[in-house]
Image: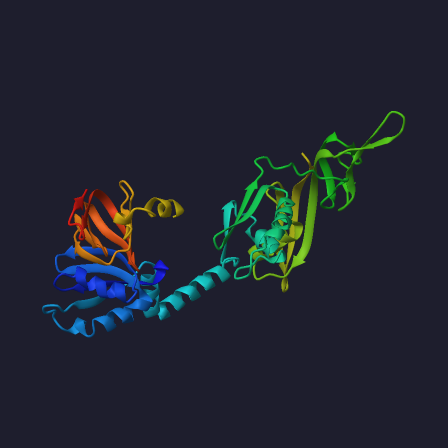
Length: 302
Length: 90
C-alpha cells in the first residue's frame, strides 16, 4: 500500500551501510536516492517508522559522528500526505463537507424566478407557478412544467412558453404573438342611451331602426342576422356604426359647477368619440342641475 | 521462474544470485546482501559469493526488501566480481 509511506532522510558517513541494518530488520525500502554524498533518501511503510528510529535511537537530536547516523522523518508521501493534512485540518474538512452537503441539499431549491421575453403577464406567470407548487425557497418540480406552460399558453397573446431551471433560478420565457387576433363583437347592437337616431351605417347585419327614430337605452339597433330570399335567417357578426343624439338631465351633488359636470360626464360614460353639443348647469339649493345634449357613437366591429 | 531454475540448476558459478536486466528499464536482483556503493551512476551490490557493479544513468533503488532489489534507470554495464576465484566478468 503506497498510500501510507513516510519519507526518511538518513544522514551520515557512507550512508549505504546503514541500509544493511534496515534490511536485517526486514524493513522494505522504496525509492532509494542519494541526493548528497552523505545522505540517503528513501520511503518506508508508515508502520516501519518506529523500527527505523529504534535502530537509530535518538539520532535525530544529535549531529552524526563517525559511524553514527541521523534519521529524519520528512513526512508522508502520496495519498498519506493528504490524509496527514486532513487530520490536521479536521474542522476545515468537516466545514467543507457540511457546505458541500448543504449545496447538494439546496440543489433542487428555487431561489428566484426570472423572466425572458416579455414580463407583461408577470402576475399570471407567478400565479401559474404558485398553483403548480413552484415557489421561491421550495423545490423545483419538473413534472409541473407542462401544466404551467399550458396555463400560460391559454392566455390569448402568449404564443411561446418555456420553463426551465438554471442553477437555483427558474427562468420563464414567454413570447407574445406578433399579430393579435381581432376582437369581434357578437350579438345585436343596442343603443347606449335614450335619444334620437341621427345616422346609421350597416355593412353587415339587419338595421332595426330608421334614421330620425327615437330609441331607448338598451333597445336593439342592428340585428345579428340577415334574411335570405326563402325567409330564413343567417347569423352574422355585425359591422355597423350608429350616431344617437342623447340628452342627459340630472341633479348632481357637487362642490362647484365643474365638479358637477365631471360627475355627469362619468355618469353618461362620455368618451372621446362622443361629441358634446350643448351643456348647462344651474344651482338649485344644495345640488346642481346639469343638462347635456351630446352625440354618441355606437360601433360594432366597425 | 521455472525457466530460470532450469537454466541455473547446473550453473554453480552464478547460483548465489540472479540478475535480470531490462534494457532501458532497470533490473531486478535476488540475493542481495548489502549495497556497497550507491550513486546515480554506479551501484555496487554485494552478494554472498561476490559483488556486482552496475553502471548506468539515473540509477535509483525502486525497492529493496529481503534480498530482492529492484533498480530503475538505464543500465549500461554489469560487472561481476567473483571473490572465490578473483575473476571478473563483464
